[in-house]
Image (cartoon, rainbow, N blue to C red; front, side, top):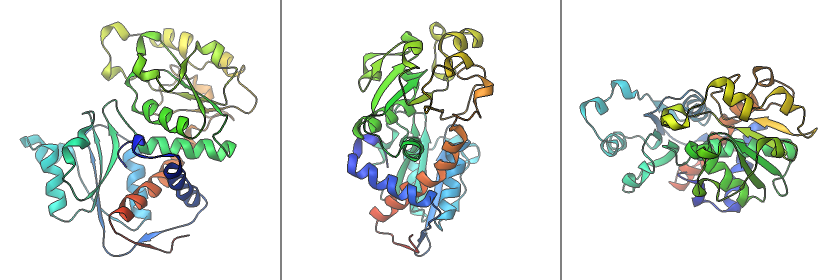
Length: 299
């Protein structure tokens, strides 16, 4: 799984159905000895750890990879790293890299490649866990109104989620500082001021401010951002009675969201993290099946 663009509505729903089955407690184990490696060239807690757990639940053997102690520090390219691991018998690799569309350099690789996040481009596994969380709550996508709020311009989560939700029939809206948007970032939705939008939507999906990708003209103090664009307790009280709060995390408490709302009754933030294992199990299973591997004890 590289980008959401590669999948139509039916294919997304097939992966989602597997993720739902895993969340219901069903299992699948790969036949034979299959090796996987997680190549994370950017920091990660949730994505890397949940892929690790997902791989082990599927019966894969996980080959450790630490970029700080790898030949990358000797000048080895991503392509050569991947080809090295493939040559010694790794069958599936999850890759996160700061370069947009890094995967275009890996088209000759025969091992299964799963995108754990490329630059500001795509984050398909986060997208699938978000879809799972929304479906668990509402049992549908058609007709839902979803707000994606914050640093959309630099967010691979926003790119992937907006495209998938649109394919599945939801209406996507955006909000946040206007200078953090461009036409390309909002092509799949509609920009609206937060205080106008908050009353209308079924899901408020907040985004982390990605300071590491900003220039000085994009800066806000924590207090200013929270007051203008954050989910305050006052804004939360204006949400629809059955609306939920989501956030891909890590969370900047008191910035994107009031700290008291992180675990309130509306919040599904930690549920998203739990769902990350099930979604990534479904993604890994599909990717390996496409490479000819078989699973037993399915469901």
